[in-house]
Length: 193
Image (cartoon, rainbow, N blue to C red):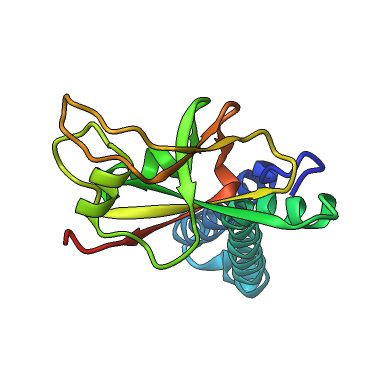
């Protein structure tokens, strides 16, 4: 991983190049044997050994780069917990599983979240208590893990709405700066009722 916490794509590219190089050496060795009528077989063990080393070394380097890319999703939460010297605050964001890719890439500024205290709400409870405007109730929630002191507005009681008709009565917070990708976990499925 580079110092900015991003994946080192150079490892992945170098590993791929090594694998291609190994394949070229292996194919070149076979072609050489065919062209020389078998006279070039004396160097086959060294050539195939080099090709195997390149392919295996390249695969290992690519795997390391890919593993680092996968670890990035957890890096931000870990760095927050180490750097904040405070406690982490967990919120819930009720939504739909089909929006997971977008939500896990980060929440927009002005996104609403609610408390994570108590058991999760059902989809219909969340739709009513949080006055969610969508026709379909949420089918999951996401945990938003933020360090104490992160910009959060609230808590505020959720007001009822007439269009669409929702009871309100839940608790809402606003994230004026949104939330970065590494702070969001889920989706966690919830029952409709």
